[in-house]
Length: 449
Ligand SMILES: O=P(O)(O)OC[C@H]1O[C@](O)(CO)[C@@H](O)[C@@H]1O
Image (cartoon, rainbow, N blue to C red; front, side):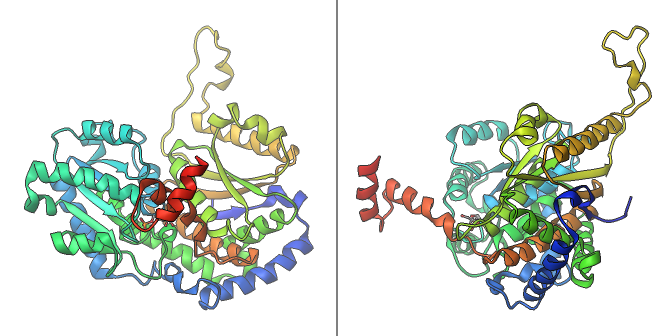
């Protein structure tokens, strides 16, 4: 087991010839140069490249201090945000924390309960969460880079009102933490007006690349994770991505392999995990790759499955359906817990052949068997190995995927750092809601409904 996050495409060599890798390595080197020298498309949004070694230390200390205060004075933290303004934090908290964090006793969790809201417009969800919070002490971390996104703004209005009713305006303002643009937007204005403690999403870091800014770091720190360790892992990932040539560069190889497969008609990448705690890492990854590459009528569609769970729902399609897929397995090499199968005196369930084996050994056997079956079914299989569930390796993993995404987007010939397509639904929604300025669209849309 290597003591770092690694990429392994040895099981996919039947689908990729050496000379293809050679050609793509040259293009990947050019793409990397563009990214690192900040000379490619969207180059004003590549601040994340140096973030693990070049971040605001004063703000970092303030994040830690705010996290300590929240851990001290709140039973519940509400994290309000959508897309890149919540997925990274949720990925980290769920990957590194207890599988049932919000349900176990505080002695086990050692932090406030953390709930995410403002990532949908469901009144049922909001109202159920109001019930969960009840009359307990709580704080809010409102996260929006633009400060104008509708989903989180709605949730914030609702919970701000509850907070102000409970504590009074002044005390409530000390329990609201705003993470947003340093100067612009409705949230920034509100924070200034009401005196909320504010944290900055740097101008040159887009939402989906912002997990290692205050966007991710404050909620992650509240959950009790050592954010220094997370940053150290990311710095190690950066060093590996920046300093290694293609032959030793895992992120560049991943970018190259997925672009070779795309050009052979593999238009869907399925990210597969065998640990439920990786579910939100996959959700984070989907936004990262979906928003970065899905444009100009191009891109690999990023999908995900939780295994072995989904082998009993999506397994049939992966094995035997339309051959447009390749699969990337996230493999946590060393399980955090060990459970050994015991022998029973009468082998009624037929499982005595597993006596003495660990559940993780069984899980890994399922994984290895599945990889070979899918490979035989013409699904190229790639693997990203994560030595264990620690903040250090998660930091490395975040950086690995971010760097590979930048390189991959340039290989594809798109600007990986914009998201023009996201505006279309917003315009329609605003028009249908009667937002001032959308009158003409409103008429046209109403006729079509
Ligand atoms: O942080 P904000 O500005 O609320 O944006 C949230 C998300 O919405 C998007 O802008 C898309 O609408 C994403 O790129 C972003 O992560």
